[in-house]
Image (cartoon, rainbow, N blue to C red; front, side, top):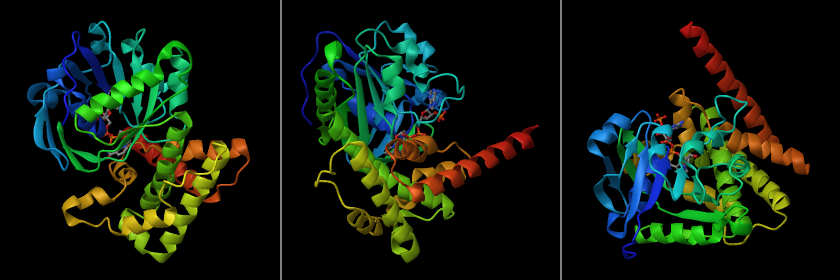
Length: 348
Ligand SMILES: NC(=O)c1ccc[n+]([C@@H]2O[C@H](COP(=O)([O-])OP(=O)(O)OC[C@H]3O[C@@H](n4cnc5c(N)ncnc54)[C@H](OP(=O)(O)O)[C@@H]3O)[C@@H](O)[C@H]2O)c1
C-alpha cells in the first residue's frame, strides 16, 4: 500500500450513511499518517461505533478496527466542523420521506464552498437532485462492485471485490471536478483500493447503466421469485431467459440515452449469467442473493425508483420499449405499497 506523504493541513472526509459500503470505503480512506481524516454520520449503529469503532472482516485486507476521527449521530451534529473537504453519500438511494423536498437536503448542513460531494450508490438518475441543490460544488458520481454487508451494528464483512469507478458530474467551470476526482482516487489507491478507476462523465454513465442492467434484472427477479439466488436464477432455464432479456433491454436503452454503442470492455449479458452460475460459494453464505431481496425480507424500503422507476422514465423520454422492466416495476411498486399500507394499518 503506497502512502501519500503527510499533508500540512488535514483533509476531512465525512461519510453520510454508515452502512456496509460507507464503513468499508471510509475505513480505506482514513489515513491519519497522511492527515486524511474520516468521520461518520451514523444512525442506528451510533452507540456501537461511538463506543468500539468499526470492526472489519475483509477478504482484501484482513481483519482490522477502524477508529474514525469523529462519530456523529446526525448530519446536523457534523456541522460543528467548519469545513468538510468531501461529503460522501452512502445511504441507500431512496426517495425522500417528504416528497416535497429533495433527497440532497440531507447533506445541506455539511456542504460549504469548496466541499466536494461524492455519491457511492446504485441507480440511474441519482446525481440530478445533488447537482440541482448544490450547483457550485464539485460532484463525483461513483459505482462500486464491492460485496459487503453489516453483520451486526458496527461490524462489516467485505466478501470480495473493491472496484470503484469514479466520474465527475458536469464539472465544467470553477468546480474542479476532475482535479477532485484524481485526488479522491489517489486517496483510495493509497488506502489499498488499487482498482479505483477514473472515467469521463459519459464513460461513468456507461459503467452505471451496465451495473443497472445487472441490478435491474437480478434484484427484482429475486424478490418476485421469493428469494432465488443469483446462481439459482442463472441456472433456471425460464429465469435465465428473463434475466438475459432484461439485461438486453437495459443495455439497448443505455445506448439510446448515451447516444453511443456500449464500449466493448463491458461483459455481455451471457458472460454475466455465466459468472453468476459460479457464485455459489458456501462460505459467502447468503451474499449470493441480491440486497433487494434482503431489504424486502426485512420489511425495508427497496431502491425501486433508482433501479427500475428511473429506467422506465428514461425509456419513456427517449421512446424505447422496456416491457420486462416496466412489468417488474409495476408489480413491485404495488407490492411495496400494499406491504407498507398493511403495516401502517397494523400499527393503528
Ligand atoms: N452492500 C453492497 O455490497 C453494495 C454493493 C454495491 C453497491 N451498493 C449500493 O451502495 C449503497 C449503500 O448500500 P449499503 O449496502 O451500504 O446500504 P446499508 O448497509 O443499508 O447502509 C446505508 C446506511 O445509511 C444509513 N442511513 C440511511 N438514511 C440515513 C439518514 N437519513 N441519516 C443517517 N444515516 C442514514 C443507514 O442507517 P440505518 O442502519 O439506521 O438504516 C445505514 O447505516 C446503495 O445504493 C447500494 O445499492 C451496495
